[in-house]
Amino acid sequence: MKDKIIKIVAETLHRDILQCTPKAKLVEDLDADDCDMMEIMIAVEDEFCISIPFEDQVEIKTIQDIFNLVEKYGEYIMAKDFFQNSEEVVCPNCGEGVEFSSDNDHDCDYTVVICNYCDVTLAVWYDENEKEYIASIDKKKEIK
Image 1: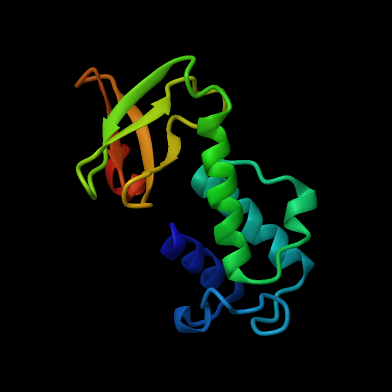
Image 2: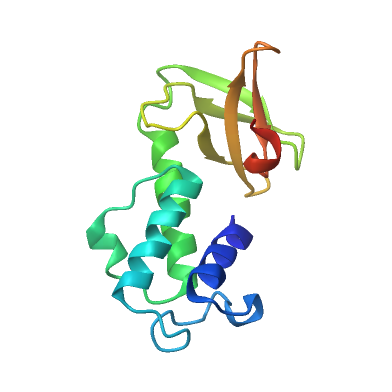
């Protein structure tokens, strides 16, 4: 998850990826303006299929702040109806079972889940051919 956010910031601000550290201040260190910040947040929300409230976005100062919000709202998607339609998928990183809600009430064809065992962010979707839920660390590599 963090690598994807750093890549979004680096590409949006036309910066070397090595400049985009968690402690890097977006405005002071990386010269982001208001339009850049909006573009970054739209790309992050699209990438992780989450919605971050504006009042949280205006508090962002560092790249670490973005990490924290993605983790917060990625977990919120799963927690709000957690036991209503619960499913389990195997984390490809650690092999442990990860529970998630199969109620997908947002506009994406996948759900973001954070593994409770290894803290990896996963994309989870239903594979119609295999008739099962699939988890991937890199959704763009797996989802067709």
